[in-house]
Image (tube, rainbow, N blue to C red; front, side, top):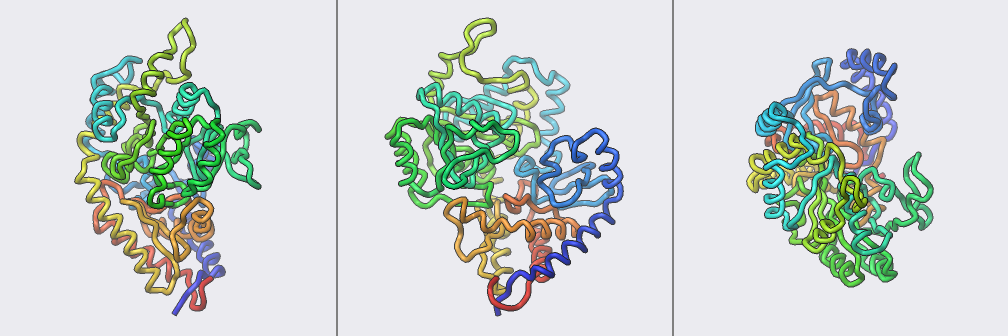
Length: 455
């Protein structure tokens, strides 16, 4: 027997589930009306409205792998704040470290001992020797691009289709009729002038661009994770490194997401080489910070071009609240007490069980689908073969299916991932949590499938 999505059943289910969610969240509805007087879309940050298919709900508290809204509904969280909460809600080591540091002084605009520890540990764990801190991975990628332009004397940036590297003008681009164009409103027309968007896993296309000798930086995730998951083909990332060195460009591995997938990130786990690596999401602690590492040759240039107060401008890096004592205390707590090899091994096993379980549900129903998988991350690939680039991955971003699934699962106490991601196992999930996700997902499959040929 084979099955396909019943679009009418899906639409009808969506209506019922939205009504059910509204019934369960009257206090959130009232709070939205109050918020609209002063918060556009009733939220303090637009993504809080744009990422979800329903009107905003308001969170009240969280502990471990669960959070509660102001109506008292509890949710088992598999979105994990889009990887910013991989340590779970209120992780004791972070709570203790941050509380202690706030009491001692949240920020001095001076370095602390924790800064030295974090840099030493990241150098040991990741492999790049020099480090700087920002407020986010967006800020880190902004600075990396500026440094690369200084080092190389070039302006051009290469990214791969399916990318997301933060909210900086040069990376908020998409390919339209073979040309890079701004992908959001409010961006300057010239934002994409120096950006080239190439297909992932295509070394021939990359070499053709690098041969111009106008590229300052190639910026990529080791595996694409903002269009579900696209894994690199064997030899691709090594080939990227060879080509950047051959043509004088620098390479940055954006591990804002993938650092949460393996000890030392994929750079260390996959034995990759690069000039920069970017980390973000507060290392999963929920505290706002990003970091970037750089090679010794790059760091020498960076150090020589120091901007001085009242002196020469130097490199345009830094910010008043970057590298705060609180952020560094949180980073140290995460590295010392949470992000250990055994922790990554455990969530990797749970991620495998999650992916195997999803594929089992698909096979049992005759669906020619696959489960994405990368360490603790899984997801729904609506094709018999996994994608090799962003364009192929986009075919699995079925908004109607994903949004209905998210509402369905929320009404059953499971908070599923945003559209461009997939369910993520955090440091505080256990085997029972994974089985609960799989049980609710199985019920959703049965609610929206019909017998017949593949859709």
